[in-house]
Image (cartoon, rainbow, N blue to C red; front, side, top):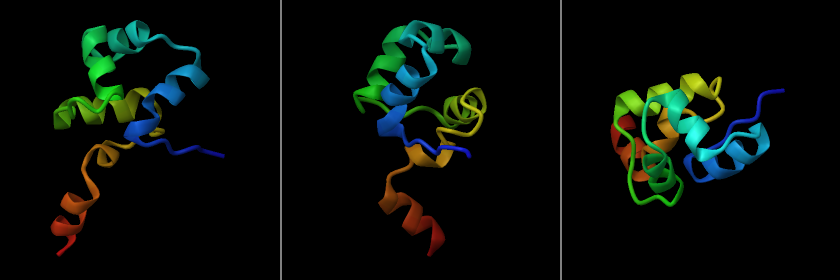
Length: 77
């Protein structure tokens, strides 16, 4: 079974996977402060970083989860 997390669950994902923010930051090529800001929703990742996060989490944190729902609905219209 694959668990799909969303951007607000990045902290929970890290806890469940036993990774620190620093370890995850190193895996995705950013600094720990960037991961902290993502978790706190103080920033959204670039498309490249969102795709990298999706890849490094084996799809558990989908790139699309970083796009606000209103933006996703507008894109579907």
